[in-house]
Length: 122
Image 1 (cartoon, rainbow, N blue to C red):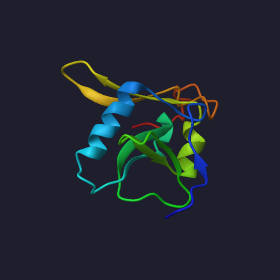
Image 2: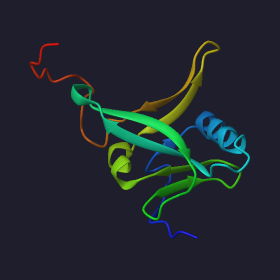
Image 3: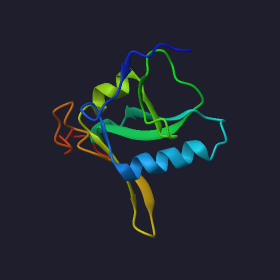
Image 4: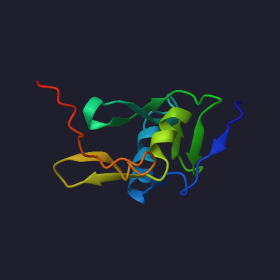
């Protein structure tokens, strides 16, 4: 069994009850094929970082983990955590569209979310 460097708390990353419930459902629906949902970040150019989620077949020793023992398990690597600290993950279903939403993601890096105007023409 891996030794994890950190257990995530709501101080590190807020995950709403709706998001927790949906993540638990997604993990449980895989019948043991995955152990968690992983949050990742990737470069988004002028727009800042892109935030996403994918299934994790296993947790890595460097991952931070948030779980409740009832199927909800979320893992985040240290690089992604650097961009997520203080953010909120929510799940929104308006009857037409359903998705995970990342709120307050600029808190950790001090950004505003607005384009700085790099001057590049497209």
